[in-house]
Length: 165
Image (tube, rainbow, N blue to C red; front, side, top):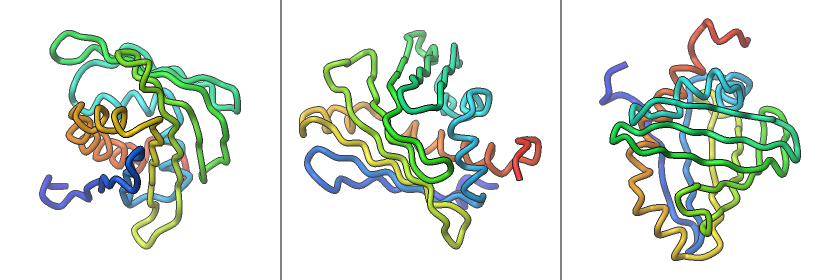
């Protein structure tokens, strides 16, 4: 698929302390959910072409923890971790999210997977403690990496070898 024709994630700021990311995928919910929650599959998209994955750990259960680590192209480590607060398979995940470089700016993310005419709409609502943390998140350059990661997520979710559906 040519870069010009790819769907793009939409990033909006519903409130002073929130970031909402939405993206449509040409794949059913169960496939997008599996690509989003299976360590071997997350390792195929989370890097967003910005580094090399060091580890992806996912204990997908309420109270379970997750941790994604990579060495960025500039040689520095990027590590995020959190704990699952709510999981409804192929519908909703609520978890904490901590960037280890800025642990005081921990957030809560609510990820929803809904049917859409295209296949699935993925929505990620990031709830920060305050506007300063939200703004720091926005200034981090996350949107460029996000677009590449979502493109790769769709490639994984639509690939036949994924073993789902």
